Amino acid sequence: LARYVGHDQREIKHNMTYAELGQPLLGPLDSEGEFSSKQTTTASGTAEHQAIDETTFRKQERMFRQQGVASDPSIGADGQMVGAEATKRQRRKRAARGDAAVLDGENAYQGPWAKFEGDTTGQTSGPTAEQLAEYEERMAQTSGSSGPQRVKRGSVTAYVAGQDERTLFHGQHERDYQGRTYMHVPAELRATNDVQCRVPTRLVREWKAHQGGVSAIRFIPGSGHLLLSCGMDGLVKLFDVHSALRQQRTYIGHAKAVRDISFAPDGQTFVSSSYDTFSKIWDTETGACKQRLAAGSAVPYVARFYPDDPNSVLVGQGDRRIVQWDVRANQVVQEYNQHQGAINSLTFFDDNRRFVSTSDDKSMRVWEYGIPVVIKLVADPAMHSVPAVALHPNGKWLAGQSMDNRVVVYSTGDRFKIHRRKEFRGHVTAGFACQPAISPDGRVVVSGDAEGGVWCWDWQTSRVLGRWRAHDKVAICAAWHPREASRVATCSWDGSIKYWE
Image 1 (cartoon, rainbow, N blue to C red):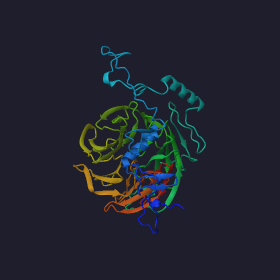
Image 2: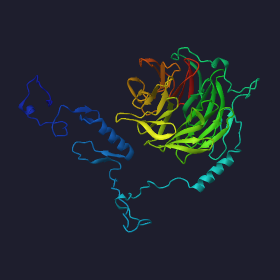
Image 3: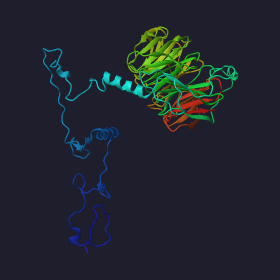
Image 4: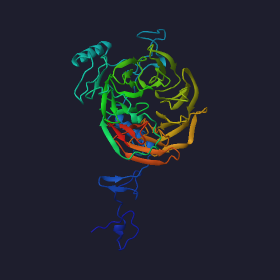
């Protein structure tokens, strides 16, 4: 019977012969060709402990997932590649530089700026104008007449570009026995309510509002008895949140998802901004589309009525511009062009004499209304993008949703600056433009988060007053009722709107 001694054995409790002690070494070797106790025996062989930083691992893992190849992690690989496509990778060749004497044409001089072979950057793709017109005409014929229609509840026909806008009323009668529509303000909501606002504790009503997610919700100014919503299905819907607690009207007029909505100061009209490059002004009561605003092919990200003049609309676009429309003349009368990225929000303050814009360029710029010159630039290397902003009821502060999981506060005085000692933390919103809201008495701040939760903080102490799971997906917007204390509406990308008190 042969007996063996392990390479890491420290004690022998029996006498061994000279032949046993002189046996050759047996067993697996490490990467250096030696026996090592650091090796770990596994079911499939041996495993070596190696260290790699998180950044390098994620980079190689992403490269392998996208391209099918990655750097060989073995010791001594010296930059070799592994993967199914490693042997097929070839160096891309540049196109011909052209003739230096030719400026335009087939053999025009490209020099060191010549593209790579097979590069289609800058080339037009997709259907031609004739093909697109033929498709729209065919879709218009199959969808029937383009006038106002009554369809079955829950089955709204999609809007096709080029058709007339239409509306759908969901109630039985548009007017009551006194001839009043849903725009009539209830008597109990006409007076200002001075009751202290508290954190909501129960769910009042839930609506399955939109397919594909809800983008934004807004209470009608003043009374707050109506709630407006827009969604990824290209529809805008109006809900009665005071007495009937049901949907009243659907506005159909966008071919793509609607990103933002905003009421006029009197609530009689509102503007919707969609990815189909149109901002449209609607009549809240009748559902008629009063005007279409489009400045080229740029996507309108946000639109706001000027509070002192409902005939003036500011539209923040994806091409870094803010355009000011005169609704009566249907033309752009002013252009604010200083940002380096898409415009995310527009907020008026200082008795509507100034407004602040936020952008993807991680900056905030303060403008004086009607003058396209920046009077204050807020930018810092450590500053994150602030895509959603809410104005405090006293008008002296702005609360912005920062992309580093904070709600930051800015002073709106003569020196527009951040309040570094006041911020609200705890939620996770990185990557999502969750719209915050502030209670009418200015004591509570509310915001959704990326996990579908709703958070409430005390304005004075920044302490968390309450939090609860409200939705299955990101809670993208929260709105506080302007009249009824402790009533909050939230919406989510799961397509639902919930009303809390």
